[in-house]
Image (cartoon, rainbow, N blue to C red):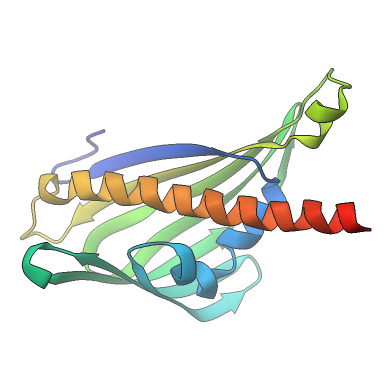
Length: 182
């Protein structure tokens, strides 16, 4: 989606078989993000407050001929309150780059967990249906046309969401396994 000149809004989402709390815990464990998100070389917590975090993040891409491309930024994250809706619950993290390699880099992580209303089958009660959405408005520095990075960003975002799903489902599987052992 086009927003303004040389700016793009990119949106993506993924379904995850894990609870909102499990996904939230993974997203807010800021210093561990670089351990499982490909292309994120550094995620360092610079400052933490109540429902606020300032991060230094460095993304790294391998380009042709062994060349590496780095994008660095200081990102402020605002952790929103849990919203309880009639058949779901939702929680967001809004973020904005305050210093870095993009003129504009801001958006939102959104976690939505649906409830299986009206279903009393045990298999339905056990299954958790959560959707993780990511929306970002991005504008590179003046010298770089956004169309040169838009496709790469879209691919990276999809990989990132898949990595978060894998991590959340691993954590969820560990919890289920522990409950079965008890």
